Image (cartoon, rainbow, N blue to C red; front, side, top):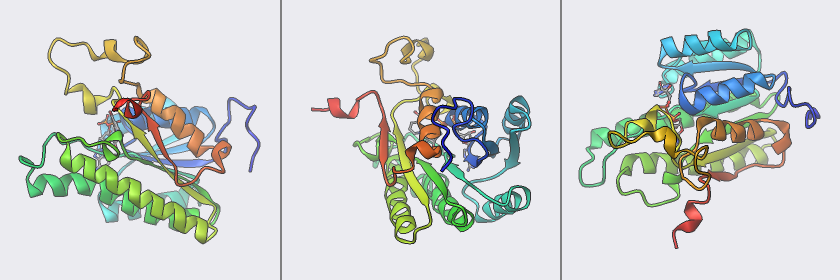
Length: 259
Ligand SMILES: NC(=O)c1ccc[n+]([C@@H]2O[C@H](COP(=O)([O-])OP(=O)(O)OC[C@H]3O[C@@H](n4cnc5c(N)ncnc54)[C@H](O)[C@@H]3O)[C@@H](O)[C@H]2O)c1
């Protein structure tokens, strides 16, 4: 382990990171922070314009690759890129995801399959492919689940189920890597409302969502992508080397307020 605890510029110095869905929102904030802390970041996303713009903004510490995270063949291309350009992978942030507003009475089977494909299949393939490369050197896998996996969200039935799948799959991955002594950790993040494109559309007209963030009211539920990125950085760095199979809520205590 490298001892970077006191080096504020290099908490992931020299590491190679892959951030899926990295062009916007939580992925973008995480890519920026990991690069600022010394990693080389491969940003993958379906949105080529936003991904290329972000890589250009970050500079030599970032590269963009077009990637549908739910496609097995796209994952193969991403892994070829990593093997050819870096020969390793230290940090895998499985972040790509979509939200679908539908409950059990109005969701179609097509809706269900679409959400499960993008949110859960992508993490399954990503973990499998990531482990194959990471197990040579060890590493950290961070999977984006949600508070929806832990609470009962009637309005997001497929989304909640897909995030529950991510949490359970991550525990299996963490256990296998430990049993096989791969030196790969796997943890999940469970944010509540984060102010990104994903949630922006759900605000009633006339309401300014930026006035509902923890910046303006620390007890408010809405946090910023940078608040999630800070936890990504911690779990990606060797500072969290003893943390494996954890489900970290990022919700300002919302879950414990339900009783
Ligand atoms: N925003 C929230 O409140 C919140 C809360 C809990 C969990 N999450 C999770 O965090 C992750 C990121 O969410 P966000 O709020 O930043 O969303 P976002 O919509 O702002 O960004 C998601 C990114 O993923 C990309 N993407 C979508 N489908 C993809 C695919 N098939 N392949 C590759 N890229 C794809 C999009 O182009 C976009 O750049 C998601 O998994 C989401 O479910 C978000």
